[in-house]
Image 1 (cartoon, helix red, strand yellow):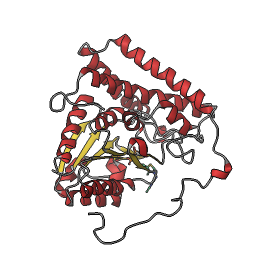
Image 2 (cartoon, protein in one colour):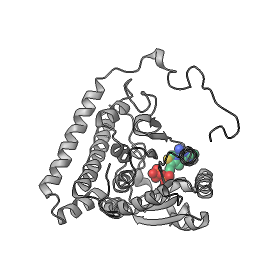
Image 3 (cartoon, rainbow, N blue to C red):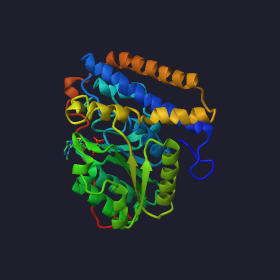
Image 4 (tube, rainbow, N blue to C red):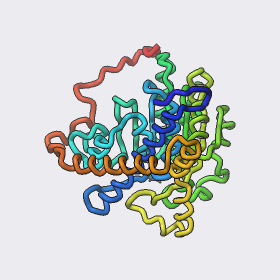
Length: 342
Ligand SMILES: Cc1ncc(C[n+]2csc(CCOP(=O)(O)OP(=O)(O)O)c2C)c(N)n1
């Protein structure tokens, strides 16, 4: 995890880590698209275009903090320590998949206790009140941890968004909400989703801090997220961040976005690739060369391809395990006395 040298600024080495994590996410994303076309994998919910805000926000929290990301959060999980092999075990629904033991569509629904990643769900916005609950528990227990909760612009139209953010605001919870605003909810453009496209404007209504960011600007996002995490950790309550980004691919591999986006718009989105922008920023500072950056990407591409070939050969779950890990085993003892948590 990155640590700051001064407020909001990371070191060269830490920025190079952010770059490598973004390249890892792109490599896995590209490889999954190939696997789907080859009929070897079922599905991709692409994170292309989201990588900048995802690595910046996740690097801003520490290993003891909680991550509650949305289903598009591949780069978030990579920053926490998810390996390419682990991800590919999930893509091929193998028995050793640490995310859902082969139970769910890739990246769609999972948790990973070891990496403190909780409650990824396909049910849009359902994880927002749960993230507030995790932050509430941390506050009651005096753990000192911060929760990072991410979601898309479409999720902000759900009741759960209001319930989760309002609860967090009232209880001044240590939580950072990040809207990865790609301006689409599948085919529904933002103008049909909300009359004010600036989600962070709603922060004032909840009495919390808000920030609107260019989500393709990695250093800017990192600085703003560090500030929000520091605010949360100091007991100053939640921040609602609106990071504007471009969805480079279709909603998922099941979606044909040319039914509702023009080819020109799709080209324009590709021109807002956060990896290209951040690579340019690193090159300008002399922190990486163009060849060095290309080398990082091609190494990641090879690792993703090798991870896929390896994962495909791993054992499938056995039928007898079909119900395993779906329900609590052996009963859970709850202490229901009021204030028992204190
Ligand atoms: C409660 C619920 N309603 C509808 C859906 C179908 N659905 C899946 S993803 C999605 C769009 C969500 O858009 P957004 O929150 O902006 O995130 P994005 O996928 O663009 O990152 C919808 C409507 C769902 N999964 N859950």
